[in-house]
Image 1 (cartoon, rainbow, N blue to C red):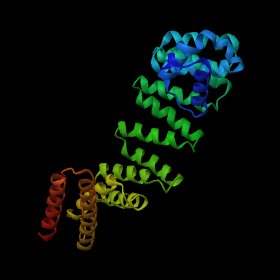
Image 2 (image 1 turned 30 degrees about the horizontal axis):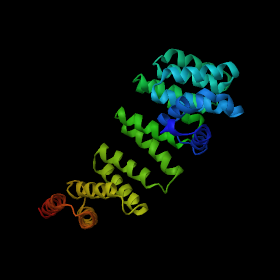
Image 3 (image 1 turned 180 degrees about the horizontal axis):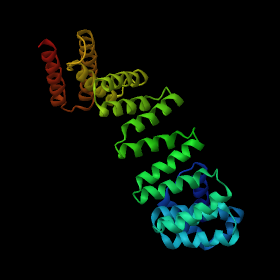
Image 4 (image 1 turned 90 degrees about the horizontal axis):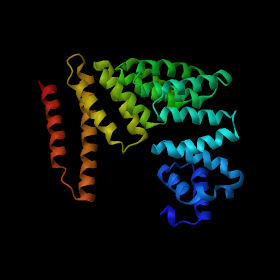
Length: 294
């Protein structure tokens, strides 16, 4: 398709992708090679933005030759540019030459220690090298400096989960919930961590946060299942009083009812058989009632 475009249409397409911040890497490289490259001088001052755009796209696609050609053009024009140095680091990363990439990134941080993009690249390298503990250490330093970077907190949480350090993962989610208490996903993930930790107190906490997630998003099926399972565990526990068990049977029954309704609605709209799922839910509810009666 790229080869069928005229030069102006290809230029405008790349411009639109930049403005809307879409990568579309394969398309970008194709437009450059098939249409724009031969007459790139016509781009004027826009040429340097296109070189950067194409270089990043080529790295995404693993096209070393196109990436190198565009990177060389940028290096000749802007030999002292931090952005071009970052592209050099990305190039070495793409070749798995992590030591050279780290040297470039460290040199940039010596000049600008607040460069968040470079700090994130260092963390990405540690993850690529499967150095999860090193990545956790770097991320902890990062979030101390940039506490409002919520994506970094979530990344740190996921790394702690990989290490099965659920207490610290839960702490990261607590920070996220304080920053955005209206995110049903934060409450849901925090509940899942507490559920995974196990124990009745954690199960009660999980139930409360699953319930809050549902309050924020009543259609959250994952939270519904979480509420059902956590309430069921508390109801079946031997270490809770009769009132707590009775209340949790009600919570589990309500969650089961909502799950059943949603399955029936899906079955009605899409004409699929959900009987096996419904049977499983009803069987679990019967088990809870038997446990409570005994």
